[in-house]
Length: 311
Image (cartoon, rainbow, N blue to C red; front, side, top):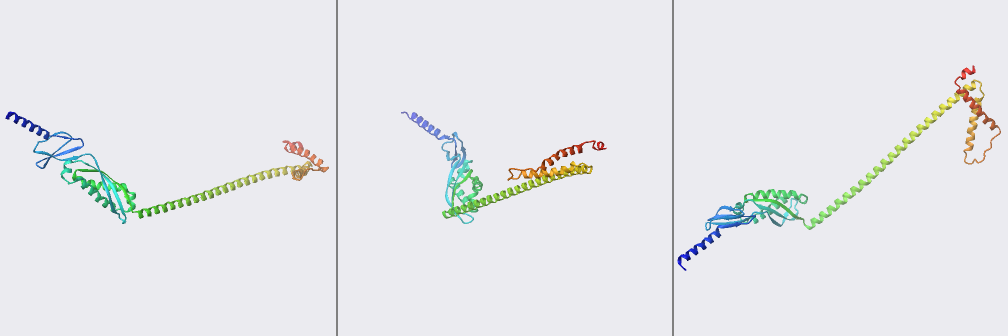
């Protein structure tokens, strides 16, 4: 082979090598940092990129997708001196690849230790009851603190979740007994309240029934008195009429009183329970005949021109 041809082949091979070194394909969700002589120059975005071979090199390959990191279980002493086991997860995303590459060494380790430290700080400032009942508040406080601390690293912490809070076994048993006692107390209170309400309702029902009964008796007494008053008025009117008739010399008025008492006596005898057969005296027909005189007396009393006729 001629020397010139060999040189051309070498040049072509070197050109191809340089071309391959210059072309950088960055996958979606990643960013590459470019360094020239060890100093950061620029960031390669997803897609086809060209760099200067030999002078430039890819420094760090940064994952720009949201990532999740497990926070291992650790012991935390609460404000009321209860020892608990806590673990959780952290969701974060790199928003500035250059800062994430050059502002902190071992990014994942730094985020993990920062989160664990703040978990002990935040949860250690609260009582055990608060930890068990205010988990959302704990997550928000941790997110605020850790996100602010990781901002210089080009990191955005999107969420921190406390997965599990495990009190000691003896403390769990005490909490169980406390919960059972509290439920028993609530059940006893509800039962007593039910009995009280039932007694009140029964008393109110009896009171209402007594009022209605008294009102009924009052109404009945009023109507009975009214009936007696009207009967007395009628009897007084009848007595007046008969008295006037007697004063006028009409003997039928006397027969009216006798017949009235006789009829009342007969009614009482006829209404007796042991009365099956009733005998009338001979004078009874005469007395009953006086009822005809009573009718005539009534007609005479109701005659409008009675005074004129007598005259």
